[in-house]
Image 1 (cartoon, one colour):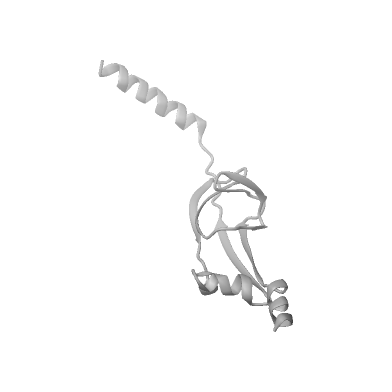
Image 2 (tube, rainbow, N blue to C red; image 1 turned 30 degrees about the vertical axis):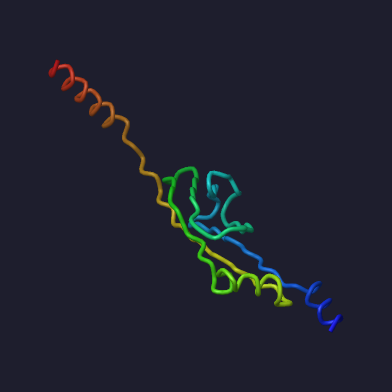
Length: 128
């Protein structure tokens, strides 16, 4: 009985949690909850489940500001998490993959922009 107790005490399991962020094209800088984590593709460990703020930026592409949720698997629900992390003698791996498609930034015709600004200036002056 003592040996079984010692085995259960010292041979406990654990849960390894990872978020993998990919983008098309790759090479975008990624922030999770306003913390820069690196460039895509990247895999990082995480400790809590829930909503994450995600930002991706890459030169020549529109930035992405969104959120994603890391859902807890069944074995991480309250009460069951004690069993999976303390009593089961092997490691669970919980992988979340978030993929994003970046949109190329549209070039602005500077001449059209200047003409539009001049028209707006004339319109604003005429309403005074």
